[in-house]
Every structure is written in structure tokens, then in C-alpha cells.
Image 1 (cartoon, rainbow, N blue to C red):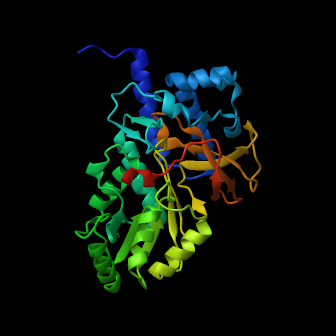
Image 2 (cartoon, rainbow, N blue to C red; image 1 turned 120 degrees about the horizontal axis):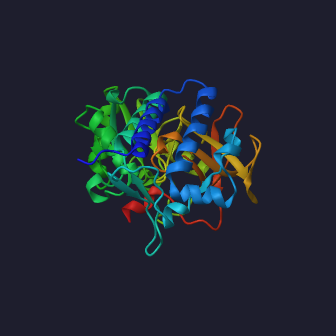
Length: 341
């Protein structure tokens, strides 16, 4: 076997140090320090990101704060292979899209990072996954292997330790019966689905759920008339008989998720952060509380790019939570609902 070069050994060593530190962040100081380390690491090992930084004349020697780090436009995931690792790609997640549209591709060289990120992120927000029955109104994993959302939900289902957990997209009769039975028994239930599928359920059945979390993962994306969040959540709260509708915020290009427990206010795990940029000047950051384009730091993305400028518009609150306001008009439709078309 050919011996590893000094550069290759350094790469592996640096990667393992960063991987260990990502999910051990306990303070803002630790987060910022790791951001600077990851930026230097990705500048060195990600040719696409390095070229982008070079075009902006940004070099690690010039970067002393998180705010100075360049954010890669998310469109690069449609046109380039955004990878910071020499390891073999284990899987490639792809975004949903309309026919003929160019989709994003996220090449993942370490699936254990993704699995660790979504399990720890979920449990920090909701507690032990083992305690939940997960009923998913999403395509089965075998129907869409390129979906990072379905991969996550499929894995959470396997970790829930409840035989009732599973995908129920095309079997609403069985779903509603199981939902009523489990809720009445006092089981902790997570009903997670695309918005139009949740609306399909309550058009036929009405509920008064006491022990169930209803979580939506996106809008209509061509299947129904688009609704503003307040109208969608009002319909879902009335139909399921719950006081809050939860939401999940994630995307193909990320390995971490943010969750809202109501009112569209999302919280991030310690290794993820959202900041806003000026809507007309993508290189200028906004003050907290002002609407702008969302820039996302996802340190779990160490194998690709941890600093991404999305096409979402939103606001970041003083406590670090954020809200989604909308999308840039020129951007493509993004959303997991297209998976079922």
C-alpha cells in the first residue's frame, strides 16, 4: 500500500480534530474560533471555495472575525462539485426541482457527520428520539434516494424503536387511525410532512390531538395554491386540534437543521448560525432585526462548504433565532414537496 504523503496525513489529522470539535461547542467564543479554523481548512482544501475567495481577494491572513468570512452563493452547488475532502464520496444528495431545472448536488464524504448532526440537532430541540413514534407524510426512502430529508427521516424512524413509525404518504386511512390510537394512548407522536399532504389529511379527517407534534417541512411548491405561513398554520391547527404547528428548516446543501416550535421562529443547534446580508449588496451584512438574505454557517458541512449564502429572505432576532420571510424573486423554487410529483 502506498504511504500517505505528509500533506495527506495533515489533511486527515486536521479533519478529525475539526470533526470532534463540531458537536462539542459550548460557547459563542468556541463557535467563532472553530469557524475561523474551518474557513482556513476549506480555503486550503476546497478548490471551488478557494477560487471564489480569490475572486474577492479574501485570504485567511485577512480574516480575523466570522463576519469577514466569505459566503459561497448556494447556486454553486448546481454548477460545481463543492467538496473539501480527499475521501471517496459516500452519497450525493440532490435537490428536488421542476422538469429540466438544474438541481443542486451535495457530495457527502462522511455520512456519519450528517447522521450525528441530525440526531443531536433533533434531540437538543425535542429530546430522545427513542421516545417518539414518527409518522412521516413523505415519499419512502426507496422512492427517492437522493433526498437528504428522506434519508434523515428514514434514519430517525429506525432509531425511534416504535414499530408504528414509518412512511404513510399514500395510506391516509391507516395514518388517521394510527394517529388517533397512538395519541389516545398518550404516546409521544411526531407527525412530519410536506404542507400539501398535511392539508390533504385534514380535508378528510378532523382531530383533537393531545400528545402529537405536527411538523411541516415546506410549502405547496406547485401542488396547491401557496399560502402564507399564518394561513397555513391556522388551517393545520384547526384541522389537527393542536395549539402550535412546528416547522423544520433544512436544505440539500446543508447537513444541519433548524426547528420552529411555533410562530415560525427557528432555533439553531450550537454548530449552526444564521446571519443576514443586505438584499442589494451581497457582501454587506445586516444588523439583527433587519430583513435580508440569509447566510448560513453550518460547521457540520466541513466536507463541503460551511459558509453558504442562500436565496431565502429573513430576519435574525437578538437571541439568534430567525424567521423566514420569503425568497428572492429570481431564485428557483426550492422545497421538498416536489419529491412527490
